[in-house]
Structures are given as structure tokens and as C-alpha cells.
Length: 259
Ligand SMILES: O=C(O)[C@H](O)[C@@H](O)[C@H](O)[C@H](O)COP(=O)(O)O
Image: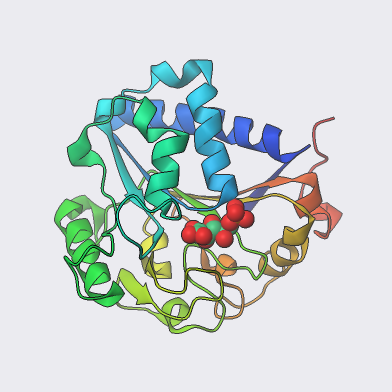
């Protein structure tokens, strides 16, 4: 478990641009060290804002897109191409604009009849993750280089909501989620143990409606009540915030924001 580091940016646009620059560097470094890199994407405005900023970043061509594995932290269990699917939004923000290897883009299953329900889809995704894990990963999912998470105003991350069964899961890597308070209600999500297999976990939050959630998760709350508190990487846990989302954090937790 790594102690959270907090970085506060002036506003959400700067936060997205700085996170995109940071992600480019991390991918390039991982590709230089090991030949490829793996990133887990999140849904939501801030995750998509990061992808859109990456699409605009001049340094994006430093990434070898054909040697990047992409996974998802969660997905809304809807038909392929639905505008509310995280995959559809990620395609629009970035993925359709860069030369990825389709074999390395691991979409979560869609509600297209292949799987009976979100639980069966979750099981299939867990099998895909297990097949990609190498012995040195020491577990049923790969040791992702960077796993991105948006933080909800109720402290949810991926589709792990406070007090729902998903956040209590300790065995399975992926679960079907039913009755999510954020629509749509049926989803597929990585669990906390799968999230914690990542080398680096980056949590993104912007806006005043996130200030309470950020303060709660970083002030010692339990992960069942505050799922974001249980999201950390084996080497690094980074909270990337704008000033509004950081407003209720004790000032001694982070250095002043850039002007
Ligand atoms: O499928 C989803 O909705 C997400 O993966 C979810 O966990 C999201 O990241 C948070 O709700 C934050 O969303 P915002 O960045 O839009 O606030």
C-alpha cells in the first residue's frame, strides 16, 4: 500500500492537461523499460477530460500506441455503441484518433446478448484479465502501470458504491453491479483487490461537489463507507485535484496550488 500523494491544480482544465502530460511520460517510461505499457481507463467527465487533453497534447506522438494495453475499471452494461458506455466516450475522446492495436484494447463486454447478465460479463472479463496476467504479476490480474479512477460525490470509484456488495468483494477481480445509485443501474466493475494490483492508481476529482468526498476519503474513512479510501496502487497513489475539490482538505496535507 502506498501513502496518497495529493496534487492540486488551479482548475479542471489544467488538471486534465497536467494529468495527460503525466500519463504520456509514464507510458513512455514503461515502454522504454519493459517494451509495453498498460493503462486502465475510467468513465466520467474527468477521465474523459484527461483523454481529450491527451488527444490535444503535442507530446502524444511520443507514445507507441501499438504497444499499449488498455483495460477498463468499470463499464455501464449497455449495448455496444451506446453513447452512455464508457467505451464509446473514450473512443470519441481519444481512442479513435490514435493507432492502437485492437488486440490490446480490452473493452468490457456490452449488453448485446453474448452474456446473460452483468455477472456473466464480469466473469468473462475476469478470465480475460487472468489470461493476460504473467507469473511476475503474482495474481489474477496484470500489474497495470497506471489505473485511472474518477471519484464520485459519494466517494464511489469505478462502479464500487458505498455499502453495496461490490465494495466488499475480496475474492473476485470483477463483479456485476446491480442497483447502482448513479445511472445506469447495471454495471460491471473491477473490485478493490484488482484495483490494488496496479503499480500506480491515480484518482481524479474536480469541482466543489467533490470536496466532501475527497476530504472524507483522505481522512481515514473505511473503504466500505468510502470506496475511494480503499483505492491505492502498490507503488504510488496519486490524487489529482482542482482547487474546488481540495477545498475541504486539511491544508497540511498538500502544498499550495500553482498560481
Ligand atoms: O462509469 C462511471 O460513471 C465511472 O467510471 C464513475 O466511477 C466516474 O468515474 C465517477 O462517477 C466520477 O465521474 P465524474 O468524473 O464525471 O465526476
